[in-house]
Length: 164
Image 1 (cartoon, rainbow, N blue to C red):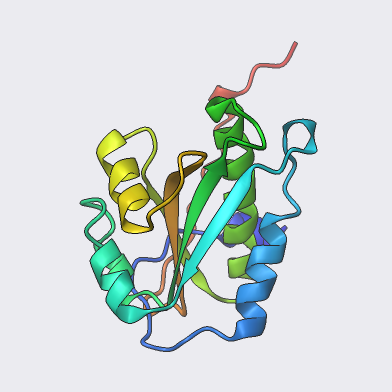
Image 2: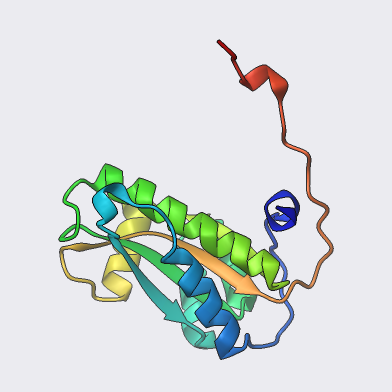
């Protein structure tokens, strides 16, 4: 549970590539996520290309950190697997959380960069990668070896729980 409790967003990365074995573990963790009817509607676009990461850092005003990341993963929904984008979003969020936790387990920093439901951001990613109609880019995740010390916050709030 330490990787769950200690995980936090990292926005500064060392200029060092991730190992192929680490990338594989992060992606494998995503595929372990639950999904409605086991449809597994996720589709991932992985890029380590520094020029592409720099260009992609413009997809959102909050994505500037991508320019210095070692790796970016676009998390997409494949509506051919499940036509309900709402369920796809839930399934892809679970897969994303698994990637964040596995990255922490590997001492790799990460930051989830929102896209959906902001149509401008979704369309920017869709056009950049020339995606077919059924592949909907939801968000990106930046990964890299941390170049900052970030202390995790205790986010537990008893007031947000109701027992019956």
